[in-house]
Image 1 (cartoon, rainbow, N blue to C red):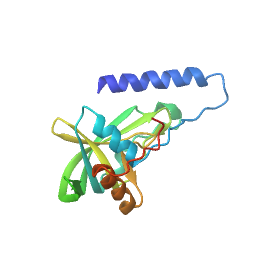
Image 2: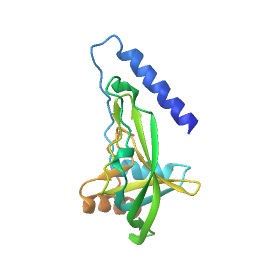
Image 3: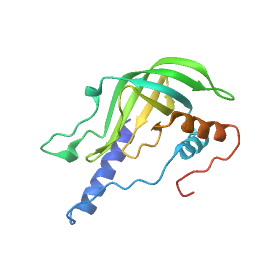
Image 4: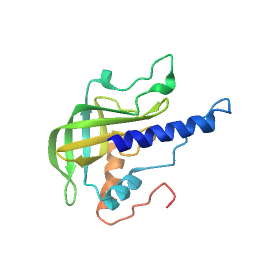
Length: 170
């Protein structure tokens, strides 16, 4: 966790130095979709669980930058949440799951991951020890809201060896 906070702090400091001479700068995210997340998780040395369902938590726990300094949002905020839905098994999302998870919201300057309580997500949750970590970063790389059927189909296509075409350049 300290390494992640240090990396984020270095990135923020680097961005501040680069953007200091210009009137404004914005976060630029690479196109990223479900297939990208699937391929990243599959090639990682970390364990991931692919979940689809509803995430519920107290939205007051989400990070907020002070009004006096919008760039002072905390780099990483973690809190507990409840997940209810299905886990991807060998062929389908066929294992019902109700679990406590850890939501990890990452911020880079004033930009923070967008998490909403009560929303249905397709999630690539990282297993860290006994915890499942649901990560939201400013570019939204491992949690997807939206058309649940279409998201589910993309994961199942990747999982079954069918077309798994990433959006990000390889």
